[in-house]
Amino acid sequence: MTVLASIRPVTSRLTVLGTGYLGVTHAACMAELGHEVLGMDVDAGKVARLREAALPFYEPELEPLLRKHVESGRLRFTTSYAEAADFGDVHFLCVGTPQRVDGLAADLSQVEAVVEGLGPHLRRPCLVVGKSTVPVGTAACVAARLAELAPAGPEVELAWNPEFLREGFAVEDTLRPDRIVLGVTTGHAEVVLREVYSSLIADGVPVVVTDLPTAELVKVSANAFLATKISFINAVSDVCEASGADVTRLADAMGYDVRIGRRFLNAGLGFGGGCLPKDIRAFMARAGELGAGQVLSLLQEVDAINVRRRQRVVELARELKGGDLLGCRVAVLGAAFKPDSDDIRDSPALEVAGQIQLQGAQVCVYDPKAMANARRLFPTLDYAESVAQACQGAHLVLHLTEWSEFREIDPVALGAMVDRRVLLDGRNCLDADAWRAAGWTYRGLGRP
Image (cartoon, rainbow, N blue to C red; front, side, top):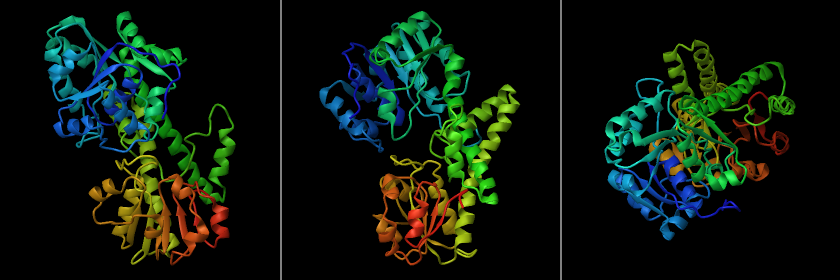
């Protein structure tokens, strides 16, 4: 369990509005920092499960932390906006901002709903703190609406404190963040938030104090940069394939440059999930609205490169089977968009599996954590309970999510289970020499 050596009791009473991935993580970690926390959600079923310390998703280290503080009474949950407003003087907005179904922009309906629900109950001075990832300019609209709704009127302050959680490392990223960004309009709001995060600040976590628009832009700008880095190396991998170069060794050499760094410089199937794709698309949409055409053009190509990687993997799979996948038995290792998560939103692995099935292949998928979610979204695929079951009699094995379980597979042992020893490493993280030595035809992306 990740804990801070210097955690000290703090008497603050905090509410967390929204108990999805961000909200539950923030609530449990704020309790770990010593606060009394009330989580609020309009979904009565979700609240009932959380009161029993049952997580609706998989995230390492989070469930025992949730159980610890539910059982201690430091963390409670409610469906009442009135109870949430009365509980404390700092209210965190942690609702989702998915991509709109009718375009690239962020869907702010959950943000709007929580403001409409909470605002009329704010009868005393308080600080409302946005953590959701929103288009720049949203905070100003939220502040204006709270001023209209709240009986306390101008005594309700707004701040923006963006989250920087990585799925699979969310507890670590909350309890040991690499920075805390405080978007504030008054010195009082800064003082309050510094007290909320006093244990982290005492441990040396840097604090960046900004205005509201800058705070809104930090998260989407960071994600856009990371997405650009991934798409860049994926574009270079096409050149490597055409020239016989090895993109993994190329990335190693580039990564020694401290201006570049090695992280996120991994060619492969590309990124997915519930953050990077929707965040860069929302950034694109907002940039277009603001007339910032150069950013819009750049991110359009970043997104397009990423989407094309999925089709490239399908093309390589077809090439490995002589140009035709009809009747081919394909084992797909991975369903989650990344390891240490059960999140299948915009999963490259499942999109590839679905496309290969449409081309006539018999596809069997295995993932250590995401099987139930995958079955709900892609019920026509076959699913296995282990690597061995998925690969039994396979003509082609696709490695599409870099779980440690897959990196540790013995290629000799697996070779005895398949019908053909043909592997497509869509994440470029397996030992090509070891697999080839075991008699496999190994193919990566941008690798000879």
